[in-house]
Length: 170
Image (cartoon, rainbow, N blue to C red):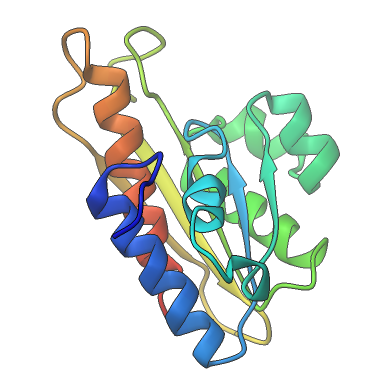
């Protein structure tokens, strides 16, 4: 594999996302908070990614989530930014504001601070929305181990990036 800015496992997974979505003619969009654009960055490491990635939103603040993606304030106030409800609203907003066929959203507590007893460091929520899908929103809350220590933040963001890329596979 050619030189990559990313770990091999992320670069390989991003290559699959690009190849498999391109083969199906699917465009993707990302709405990222705790990953800060790593998912979109991973996809753009791959030659040919312009056939697949429509756009990526980095909405780190609650204001950005509301302004750029249309996340309702009442969702953030009731459930918090690290909630399946918020992630689903982020993914839905990204899909509505793009030409993508599928959007994935990520929001979480990467640490080392910012955690709470209800949402400790390592708590990350994901949502995936596909154009034309009906039924219940697809969302998941995960807890990633390894958030302690000097490499904890990077480890949580690495695991979250992998999970989000997997959600973008057809």
